Image (tube, rainbow over all chains, first blue to last red):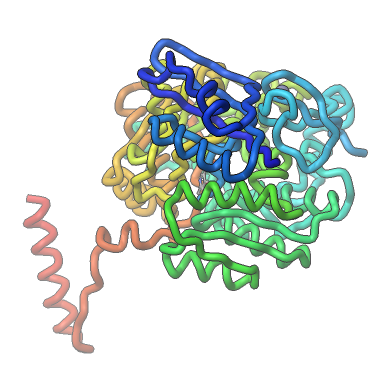
Length: 80
Length: 417
Ligand SMILES: Cc1ncc(COP(=O)(O)O)c(C=O)c1O
Ligand SMILES: [Zn+2]
């Protein structure tokens, strides 16, 4: 079992969809939300995923393809 | 006598010991160092600081290091100069330049890396690591060399030769990574999880980031213990910006500054300006972007401290400006031609942003303004290579010189006319 901490950023049109629920169900990944902020036009969620390494990878790929941005929680770490 | 007491989550305020950790286990918020300000107020004075070394370590009580064994390549205490000619060009009477181009590895990153490497060694690490497109790479490699630590440095595979060399010379293990910017970011987060290294801007980031406070301390001290009215700063992750503000506020808190009413001014290049875009939209949400600008040292599409940078603008009643790549080049040239300082693209961003805001009247003529010039122009020569005059080439005779000079003056006056 692997754990991954990520931040999802949702565009407006996806805010109302059960993306996190579906990620859990389709890919057998346990999703654990730690912090979130959703406004009218966009939202972000910081969460921990737990599951098989492959399942997390394919699940996150599916989330990205929906149009959700997936980032490591530390933001970009490649510095100037 | 260490004055550092703990790490604290910036979101939920939970406290943690001074370990190599950077996020809160509960809410995954970023951790920040907390100090015993009462003790600092009691023990520190302007005089005691003045007795310290001419480097960032004169403020060591305000930095998160516990021991005596500093990794020191003499970062900091760089010149603060009154910029008469640039000020005249921009319509600012009290303009100063904090020239951080002249740090040991030619950028302000020496401040953060000095603290990160010192703390890393205290925490028992043998290896320093980072991912960088230049400034951080050189600084980490140099500090590791000085500390006798191993260094692993990850760079994009298309990095300019000059920057590769500027890190390679110190003897680190340099790894060029193929793939997109996003892929490189992802790899580095994985590496940081996987190896027991001090990844300077990941697992020891809470310590690392504190190094930038020294820019605020120094400017205040060099101004004769007063805070500027305006501080104009280049932003990538937003860390430097928030820490200059934190530094000034701390000096006030411990009684070394009477009043801090500095307006913090954030500048970015339009090709990567997620923080300014949010500021201009009046939003506290950062929308990550794909960077595309010559200001590569500021090209962070998803800035870790973006939200806190926005809060700093808000708290300080500051401002922000994003400038085009053409303005960046003009800014570099203007600074060089008026003050004799050759800055990298981040400096061009600051000067161009300053020009915008001065023209718009957002920075008043008499305001005491400090422009933070954070990196050296020799590192980003390609940005201006096509924008400087080629030399006049002549045969070795006096008449050849005189003819060439006349021709040059004729074209110059034709262009001016
Ligand atoms: C020259 C220069 N100035 C400013 C910055 C901004 O730093 P921060 O990520 O703390 O905003 C960087 C970051 O890499 C830099 O290299
Ligand atoms: Zn927390």
